[in-house]
Amino acid sequence: MHKYLIDIAGTCNLKCPSCPVGNFSDSDFLSELKPKGFMDKILFSSIIKRIRDENPGERVLVNLFSWGEPLLHPDLPEFIDELNELGMACNLSSNLNITKNLDKVIKANPYKLRVSLSGFFQENYAISHTKGDVFLLKSNLYKIRYLLNKYKSNTQIEICYHLYSHNVDQDIFFMYQLSEELGFEFSPTWAYLMPVEKALRYYETKSADVFPEISNNMIISPDDAFNITNGIESSDCDLRSRMTQINYDGSVQLCCGTYDPHYVIAKNYLETSTEELRERKYSNPLCGTCMKHNLHKISMYHNAPKWDEVGNERLDEMQAPYKINMFSNPKVSNRQ
Ligand code: SF4
Ligand code: SF4
Image (cartoon, rainbow, N blue to C red; front, side, top):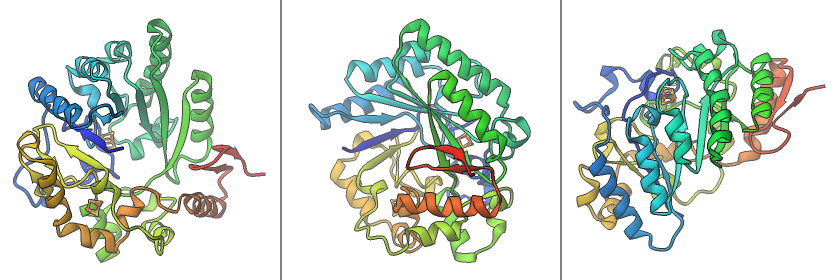
């Protein structure tokens, strides 16, 4: 199944250091343009109509996010309604540091809402979710439980817990318990550095200065990630063969791993055929360099069991209290 990512809000209220919204400075951009803005309603309707028409009778997954915070978009509840009417599954991902929209969004009943976070206590959470307020986030988690019950919505809620060395002690235990209490799925996730163009700079220079605020907090280091995925057969990159990312202004990005508008492959999705998009993706020179450093495999967690094995070796070395699994159960268990 092909997946579509529509970045309806090309901006975010936080500045996380492992994400381009937080780690891209003006000097990092190759393009004069900046990927910032909100998608127009008519443009959105036209885009999803084309997607529906091109996938008749098929189940289609549409992520209404890529590098932006979708709950900032004032028309999000209507977008969810439109997707539901067309029989398309709507996925959202949010940092939940918001005070608006939540009631209408849950009432609209999207298929899935992933909540991305990285700690239970403010001092740790704010290291990797810079400018975030964990009290606002936690109050919204309770509110979501309340709203799901009130509207009888069956939206799946996933707590995506980004794993760093600063949040695998009591933070993960308490957040796991909160998630259990609320009846949400708990998904610990080994953090890696993004976007592709900046991670490549790390791999080509091996300098911690590329990601100065967060390099020392990685449990699985960029070198570990390269080694885990090295030698694993992969004839293509899923990000280009199975996914299409459309930016807030209707342009098409090479893939969801890139951020710089320099890697826009079509200015207007609506005016570019699927064949042309494919041809432009497959002739982009960035892909060769990216694949040389395994970034296409790292971003999809190829060799999944090995990520858990190496991650837990690192947790052992840190004498962390819990064993943590991303790809098997139990997700969090005592080490002894
Ligand atoms: S909340 Fe998400 S999109 Fe926003 S800066 Fe952090 S990682 Fe990036
Ligand atoms: S090979 Fe790399 S740059 Fe090319 S589409 Fe895949 S992830 Fe993006």
